[in-house]
Image (cartoon, rainbow, N blue to C red):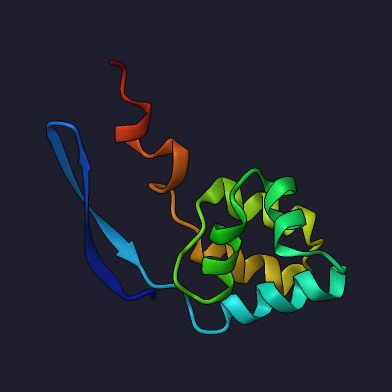
Length: 107
């Protein structure tokens, strides 16, 4: 199970506390290896997935867990085998990224 730490997100007058997860060991290296085998740059993967290249870099360094949507897109773009796809899915979080509740709240 990923290690949990606290992260505070401040949105104007609202503060939301959520759990920040530490990715499982080996996830970042597996992503980098899959990207290298596919012959893609971080920029190319980022463009295909719809994120910034620095986010792909953070995933590969083991600093972030991907959202469910990003994990699914990465598995498709990198054509991950079952084991790699399962590791990525296990690390994915459903309260991250653009779908996080405070980002989708009606104004």
